[in-house]
Length: 47
Image (tube, rainbow, N blue to C red):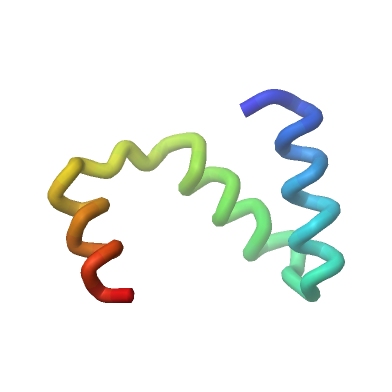
């Protein structure tokens, strides 16, 4: 993730009322989580 992308995410989530801890956890998840195809399909099916 580029610095401008991270900054935009932080700005938008802050506008939505997210606190710094929750934003940090979300960004760490985005940067480190590598979902399997099965995991992605299961999430999509739940919606």
